[in-house]
Length: 337
Image 1 (tube, helix red, strand yellow):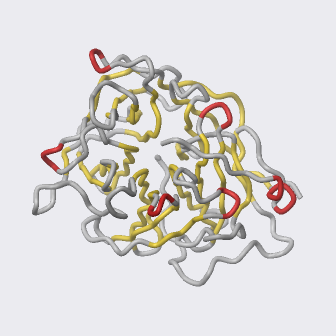
Image 2 (spheres, rainbow, N blue to C red; image 1 turned 45 degrees about the vertical axis):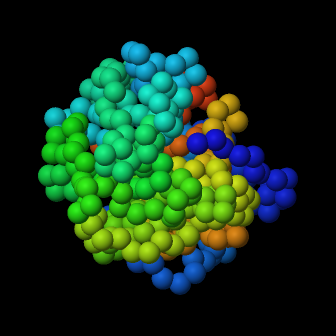
Image 3 (spheres, helix red, strand yellow; image 1 turned 180 degrees about the vertical axis):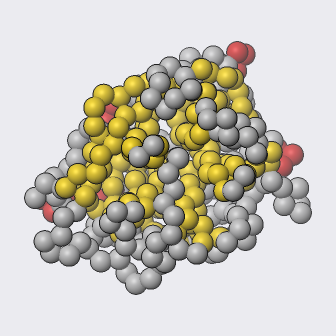
């Protein structure tokens, strides 16, 4: 993914102060999708995410053996706790020498979430064209545990795919009757990718990005069982974050249980000038289309994941150098007037 410029001076006049600084938590239950999400009532305290304390680096630029390239970059990733209590991190490494779209998954393992320098454990997965996957096209893994099963969702450049496992370390692809792994797509050439899954109300909500007509948006589909999925719905598009193909990267939604609000993190830029827009809504299927009524601020990070562990909240994000992944504490604080 290649972020695009977006923020205009007008935004600084129209929205509250921009935040600086700045899986595995997935909110359970909450209001189902309904009417158009309103702006915050007058006088209400609006909580916004804020990075607290120093960052620590958990993953660096890995040695891929013969697939290593000096230009490679660890980008979109997932963090979760395996059945044995260890922490797992899988990242899409782009610009490798694996051929095709140049992307594959590499994995790291850490004893504690708060430990730096997790152990690199090698290439975890490569695209399988026999399953209909685009060569070198693996993108943005995401893992949740439901009962005793770990579910990994990922992109293959054109489709969202699914794999499962029981220990949180090894995964087997789930294939359809046609032998392919693709669950759904926004269509050929739209680069459907970056899915994350959240339980909201009675259904699972899958949030992802794609760029039909070269216009990037956050889409959502719902499912009762990860097998059948609803039609897609645009849940965030346009506004101050823009409409370019990379204006809605790495969507990540958090249900803030204390207040009942849903927060969407939507990245526009990677690297030294990283930028992620943060939106807040009562409706998990409406964060604003061609408007900024739900926009509450920005963070100077790229591809963030929010992790809840032992009563504390953490944020994981890319290093500004795009040569690794870092973690820090995250707090929810009242927005400045």
